Length: 581
Ligand code: GLC
Image (cartoon, rainbow, N blue to C red; front, top):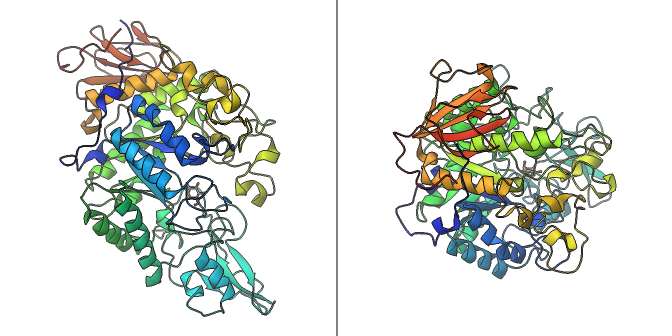
């Protein structure tokens, strides 16, 4: 029995076909690019659009269907670009609109669709509309674009309500009025540099319609919609003397007043109509940290197309909880006719190659410092590979985050002085934040910035750990058993066996496969492909007839601990030509 060899995936991509693929998103594997850290075309230490265009072959070679670009719009970068100062332009640090058009054309030529980030809950305090609101008087039309309120208390010195910011501290900041006196307060669910738009105001809706059209007219294939569940706030902005962070769930049947209010659906329906008026192939993907049944309401047939499955991402490497979240996710999304998505890493959470190097639940967004307990790196990587192999076998659509295909670990010893995540300062240096998953990628084992930059500069906006070179693309490409080759193999097989379109069946543990520690094993079938993920401490025998297609670790007749194996048992396999070495 052998593991699968790599088969070039690039041969299977090609220029996008014009029709007949309206449902591409139902099964797509979508690769997230964080532009600041993917590739640096001008050597200034910060990634940019020409850098990305120059590296798109990597995505074609990997075999993904689409890419999602985190924000590249003009921004003071107080929150990594999620503080947008102009929604319809490119930050000069990242290039120009012409650079964007080139990126799009090159991606489309390679058969890769392009999704951009829409950040509708808030803008940057440098946005022209907010600057105008600050300059204008209380009660003005300019202020009505945002949530300005008088403060509480006799002199208005207390915030208008008790809401807290996602980045710690109050969700309100007081402004100084034109006469120099302390004045009104404005709402920001995130950093003070990110004022929340007032979505009750038709002018806000109209302006976002223009933004959507601007990018759709340029040819983008869709939008990932940032914190979409926060757009509408409960009337009167009532107090909510409970946590607003973490798991957002109804309390006694009532949602927190800043999350998942009924009014959001009408907005999404309007956007859907707009997208559908193009060609029926543009999509909306919801970022909403909601339980599966609440997230599913956002992706009903006339709203968005898909939503990130953060419950899956939050689940530790334990068989029971994973089985439960997979089953519940599929049920919730099937009920509304939407595909289920799967995701393990993104720019907001500890990379899964490090997360799984701790036992149990970890704080996803807290970050790790040099003096904190460090993850068990080999164990983390081993489990990450197994988790990815489990994820890519599941029906639906999957999201990958740049660098995970290299098994890249979180940077867990960044100098504190280098940290950029606003939560580090706002929490009084208690929460280190998300910089550790945002470090510039290693492309080559050596050289300035490990190939991240094409210039001579080796100083990157966040420093690269000294061992990142060993994870470089060049170090892994073509090396049997490398994480990069594992991803290429899995993506190739996923496409070939049409696993995205498939149906998941759990294989009962009482069948012909005896399993020591059976509760720690996930055994599923998707079409002719069977998958055994062993999350326990003992090897698990494979069925005698198993023909291994891919494995996250070398296997013989058994699946070792913390490993996942894809196999067929012969009869039903009509696709598996030449997969094995
Ligand atoms: C989303 C983004 C995150 C950002 C936040 C505020 O959660 O993914 O990076 O900080 O929104 O825009």
